[in-house]
Length: 488
Image 1: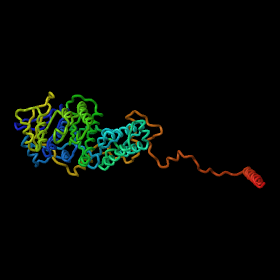
Image 2 (image 1 turned 135 degrees about the vertical axis):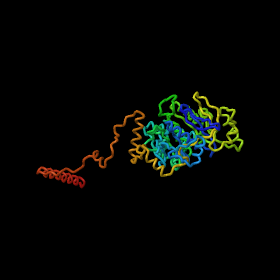
Image 3 (image 1 turned 45 degrees about the vertical axis):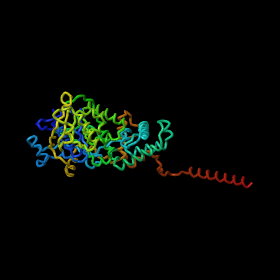
């Protein structure tokens, strides 16, 4: 099976074999060149082939895949000119949103994110990251796992209060490092980062669904608000990719991917990234292929992606690049050299002259060899291009079968119990005998309180009065004796 991407001036259809889609890809081009429409075309074609898709909807435009295309649109006219007909279509869509406003909530725990990604999210230096790693190690040793940012704050405060003991057991930490982490947590809170942490936890396999007709579900993460915190956005998407690698079994070479993951605005991931993080991403991209996952990075320039990661990307779609400065010209030259040569296409010249909707494409063929570069016009999508209305969005959100699964946990204590039980189960630990999942019942504490209720009155016999007379007589005699001793 293949997915059609574009058409050359000679009428040749350029398509990508589905079996090579998990060899990853790259979509690049300046703003306004047509990257979003290309991304939508790819998502629709993968969905038709039964491949689930994940993409971050940065501008809201991708939500249009949930609505039928318009016969009267310019893209419909272009489809008729290129293919002879235009057939409107819509696709199964699952909307996601960290904040829960424009889609189903995605939540996880501080413990699941881990110190490395959290340090990147908080923009910590090496010393501060070391203090954060100690905090995670201590919480693991104490079995006091952290669900929310508040839990992390309490753990940091505890480290501050017991700093001498912590330093002896785990290594040196400074109050300045802990204070800096606390300040960064406040900044993350102000940007809404706390909404990411809570119960119930997100299950990454919910990305990998198909509808009743065998079409892959297109999972769209509403990223409009999320983009106001670029590091949170980039690290969150990297965590999703890490979860895919951790959870999915080995698949080897597959007829079609289990999931295609579009990483839009990929430059945010690599901007100011330390060498260790780049190495981690390169390794992740290389290994996740064997899990049956294809990753497509979407960004403005190939120069935004480190060379070690670029080497892992088999298919390339290049929209127009603008070269106004010497640096831009060097970038264009490097982009042109990345393609397999085609004598009929002057790549370096074409890159700066491409019209909107045109692109240079090279994909992996059936023998896993890159094809010669071709200049094509991208085939138009079948669904609506542009965002759906709020009413349509509400209807899509209400119809999802995942609505109940990811509903809010109203009781915070219940959320904590669930989280701790899950942590113990993952580590093979038994529940402490003193803990219970039984709901709290008002007044249930009474079973633990001694019975101080007064006893029923009983009749007093003559013996009681005799004992009382003897008692008070003894008290009187003792008092007189003591008084005589004092006076004498």
